[in-house]
Length: 444
Image (cartoon, rainbow, N blue to C red; front, side, top):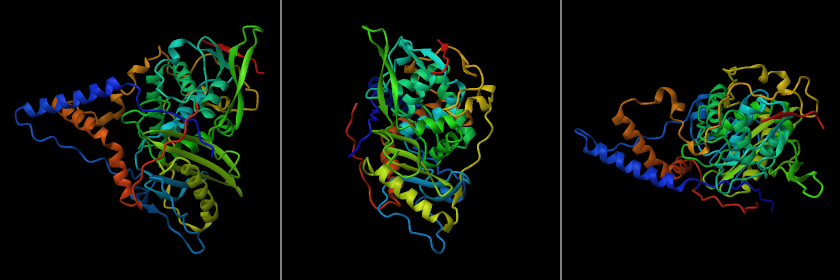
């Protein structure tokens, strides 16, 4: 049985987690000692979003079968899933589509939606040592080396095929730094209508508070597939990636990389999009397939075993193609808002097909962003992302911090309990085996 090599783990800064527990206890003690302080109240998680329609905010299976419609596949175990028509935006069926769960590497779709239009693929970038710092322990890597040159198109192949966190970091630094890229990704999520998504790291590595939903992942995939380069990268089964320079010949070696999407080339008509796995997220996957002039999108999050994410995606695609004309949509994929910082780099020249030569000159810079890269150790401290929900009263801040930090330790159990109210039974995910031309313009 094939198994992917996505190996993200959630142990990047154990000292930070210990400090967080200490901070939570200290905050609680301060509040307890304060005059008039009441018992520490833990707020319930926010209700599911109603983006896309009221039925999508309801728990459990949402489907409206008409005469002649096939039944949904039996034995589905994902904590959340959604089937939608990519062209019309009709949601054909869904199960807890707004349940907020860790995304794993499927978040790289939002990263690509945000950063891919900003660089011409012919641009050559020399990787510096600091761009490879801060990668999480066990991160999936394509094998980028410092002080070597890489074309932007090679970096994107590293992102889409190998799910390389090293490639994400290099592109994020080119884009103005990790923190700036996270800010832009959060803004892009808002523009796409992805109200369930909170971005902490650009690569999907497990971080406290990094969440999305099956509905939002479908929005990211749908938007990405409108970009011919995105579509071509996620449909690429294998490629040659630049390696080290041979000291004897002075020539640059290459090595083969393969797409970790296990349905690509196996499910008829599949055109991508992205898979993921972390210890916290379990398996996640968004797939798109074409059949009979119709394109369907399926997102599946956290089934009970690793490979079931592919089995259940395939089963839902089969059902969707058979049922599409015999169901009443239960919701809608919302239409994106225009980008707030639209620039020439996001125009047609940046969306040219991958196989065609770009019409204009390659750009050595980026549109927007700028400034030095932010150290990766600062990730996760993006307090400004929540906008009007930010509290200004010191005591309220302490209470919120204490409650949140205590809640984080039990977040997965709480989320699973929410889903299991409509699921047949609880379950623990099984971990997969681990494995380990064109004229160029230089960018430094």
